[in-house]
Length: 81
Image (cartoon, rainbow, N blue to C red; front, side, top):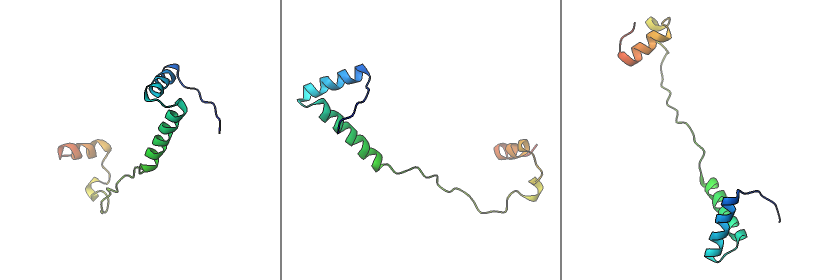
């Protein structure tokens, strides 16, 4: 199948030089790179965030009405405001 793609001039020139140096064609070099990229992407596993939730009943009763500043201070200093 034929298709047309646009490549930056520098990238195309570098690819042509590499193909010539390796005694291959530009087409073969592009095909090899595309196959490698597709294989790499197939091999990747999607990122899944680990479940780090904890069991509990929410905030302690004495903190139920506390504001964000008090909760942050308690978390970082060990004492509320």
